[in-house]
Length: 229
Image (spheres, rainbow, N blue to C red):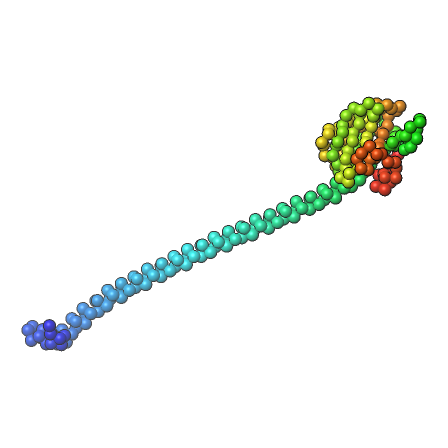
């Protein structure tokens, strides 16, 4: 192989062309190779740029999707927290409401008190009222008896949240059954004249420990600010 300059001289001797012409042809050929290489490099750069742009777009979309999921979880957590707070507040309110005390009967006249009567002890208060007058649970509790009992006629017993049991007797109608949960002011029946009774009235007894140990209802009712009659 001859060096490039020798090759040029050989071309000049054989063809009679000038050195300038041979140099021009060589320059043209090298420029064409460089142009092709430049185009190849440009295409590679454009492909790289496009790939980078696509990667950035995909990354941005993934970041946005992740941010959306995080925001959705945060919204769900806030919603759950609000719901839990509302439920807790409702439970607290129900607890407070359940421990209120209200009158067993809203209108009536005290016709007989606690103590000796006709040779025996009268264990409650008799509150005279027209037949059909509503009778209410005095607080939150559970109905432990709802039946027709010989001397009491229609009778309802309620055990309240503090263990106290109330007895309602001589009712014309019972509106609750054993096992029912009642809240303050729930209607449990109507005033009547059933059983051993001489007129329409509510017979009300208070048993503080739930057994057959009645106390005078009047002081108890006054302490709870629910005295009637």
